[in-house]
Image (cartoon, rainbow, N blue to C red; front, side, top):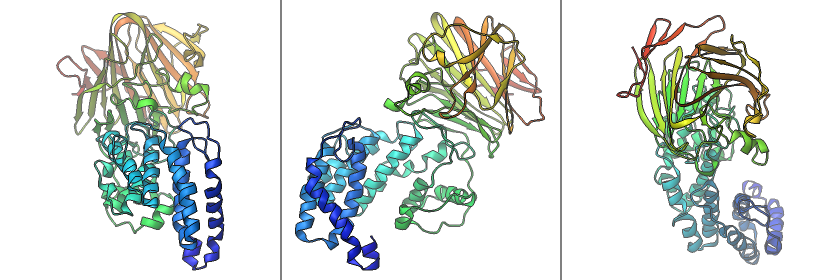
Length: 537
């Protein structure tokens, strides 16, 4: 690039030498060991693809300074065997296949070989199939991990750029335009997205790369307003994509977080009350997410007091035992586990969704998470509290564990005692410093944070075993205070109220009776057989 910009061919000498070296030696490199295919320069074909794409960029810039013989040597000795190497491996509808497709299409256009172009663009695994089958109707990539969503966006953008440069408007195919702003639909009011499925714990806000592409390619006004907000708050505006596509952002309205929404494609019912400090509750019910999915059907993710309170923890590195023994289990999520085991990979269904001026509500069901068990969760969110009703019904008595972890330091007025009981399995062995008590009365637990208090009240039920323990939180953090509520029965209902309190607030009294919950002077009607949604009266 320096040679092109300066008009000095000598700057291309290094690139000529490197490309020539690979042309002579690439075929002789031993294969790597995977795991995602086998490369020659890289260990796996996945990273070989991204490396080859960069190498083709370099060759495209350098060919103007090479002889015909040198160019042909690079094509025959490097690019052709490179694409042949990666094309041996197939991954179905998957983020990895998207990188393989981009590499095959790029090689085809580079070499003038329509067969490679067609291989990358068409067929059951080509670009069009990935877009049609992999992008959910909300615009989220089906693996339901923002990490893999963003990784797939990078691959599809590369493919679209290659196609656009050759007269093909692939950026307009199917649901591509929705792909770039889907994280905004998903994000908490502070623009930090949840850590769904296999990905690291989310601490940063929605990235600007995809939003810049949404503005450049579609002139999406929502993307533009979100970008203005990000840059006004100090995000740097930089990157190669801006050199290629960057333009001034238009003046416009201030970015407003979306309201309550059912992302039915992703299977996420998201309840919001507005404002950066306004509460937000997410109910996961739908798409599992393939191999990167977690066994967390009907999980609750909660935001309030301007921060994430009850998160999905995401995961750690795949080679770390905690990944499979903790983060990819049901007990590490804010949901129900039966028999101390993991849920099956399954898709649930939404029972109802409602948006009103004073509240939002959602209800969902899973009958496939555990054989012969039906799980139903019903949520109602207002400005000051969340009502959460989790109904469990089975055919025989078993252990039912309701779990919750939250940011901050947990305290409870219950007289908890040290619990030396043997853990049921490796997963439950990660619950340390256990303290427990059995009660049938209504009880409370609170988590104190720097911004306020999350106060949890749970209605009483006979022989409820309450355990407060230290358990792994986000990877790299100290252990989090984690709550496990256990009942031995075939049918039960966990009725909970979460109040979001400023530091000086004590919370409203909670009373459950006659199919209703009284929170201070406010009454909520619990779900019924006729209406699965709680109602604010």
